[in-house]
Picture 1 (cartoon, rainbow, N blue to C red):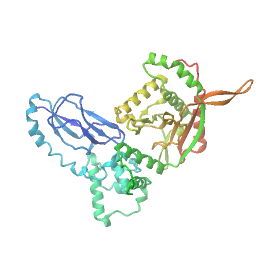
Picture 2: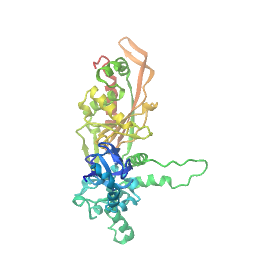
Picture 3: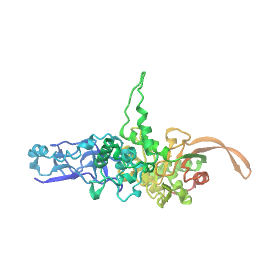
Picture 4: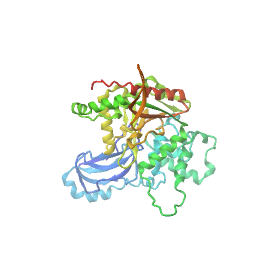
Length: 443
C-alpha cells in the first residue's frame, strides 16, 4: 500500500502557518489529483488546497479551526487502488498524532490569528523569527519583545510556537509573581489597546427588535486591521479634483478595439494606477513604511487595489512593479487579480508586498472618501465617481464655461512621516498626470 502525505503548503515568504476552514473530503473518500481537499485561511487570504495525489483518503490529522504550521502533514492518501478496502483500519490508527494539536483548538485566541499581520511587535527586534500569530498573541497579552525572547521554543530551529506562548501565558496567569518586571511593557505600543477596542464593542446587551449577526472571519480581520491602523498612524486627508475628460473620451473611443486586440477590457483603474506609479517615482518618500524611528524607503512600486468581494468584504491584491508595466500589462494584472478575488482564487502572495494602495470609492457612487491607511504603508489614495460638471476653462480668446468630466481625489497619509506639503504635492501631481492624458494616445 503506497501512502502519500499531504502537507500544509507554503503560501508566501512570511506565511508560517494557516487555519483549516473546511475539509471537502473525509476519511474513506476517493480523491483525484488536483481536486480540492480543503480550504485554509492565513492572515492574508483564503485558499483552496488541492490533492497532490489520486487515491483514497486514509487519515485526516487535523480538525477545522486548527492552526497548522507550514510543511506539517495534514492528511494521508492511499494511492493503491486496493487500499480502499483497508481505509477504515488505517483511519482508526492514524489519529494518534492528533492529540498534539488538540490543545491548540481550545485556545481562545484562535479567532484572532488572522489579524496578526499588523501586530505591533517587530521580528526585526529579536534574533528569532516569530510568526504573525505568535506576535499577535504577545501583543494581546502585553508581552514585550524582551519577555518574548525568554520563552523557550519547541518549534523548528527553536521557534516559539502558538502552543509555547499559550502555555507561557497560562503559567504567567497562574503565578503572577513570576512575571518579569513591568519595565519592558512600553515596548508593546498601541496594538493591545486596539485589540481591546475591537473586543469590547460586543460587551453591551442589545435590546429591542434587533438581529445579531456574528462577523465572519474576514470581517473580523478587516475590523481589527482598521482599528490598529487608526491607533498606529495619525491620519491626515487632503483633497483635490481632476478634469478626466480626455481619459473618458479616449476610453470610449478605444475600449472595443482594445478588447478585440488584447482580449482584455480596459477600465479606468489601470489608467489611474499608471498615473500613481509615475508620480511615486517623483515623490519616493510617499512609498515608505515606518519601523520604530527608521523610515524604510521601498524601491519597488507595488500598488494594491482595494477590491470588493461578493460577500461585501474588501481585499487588496497587489500589482507588483507597477511602474515597469505599460497599460496593456496593467490591464491584464488588474482584470486577473479582480477576477481571482471575486472567485476566491487569490494566492497568499497576491496580497503581499504592497507599498501603496488605491481604492475606487466612485464604484459605489461616492464623490470622495477618507480611506484608512493599509498598514504598514503610509498613504492611500481614493478616487471618486466621475461626474459631468460645468467648469470654467481658460482659452486664448478668454474664459469659457464647458461641460467637463470631473473627479475628486483624496489622499490619506501618515502624518508621522508625510507632511502636508509632501502629501498635497503628490496628490496634485497625480491630478495633473491624469489631466495631461494624451487623447491621441495609441493602444
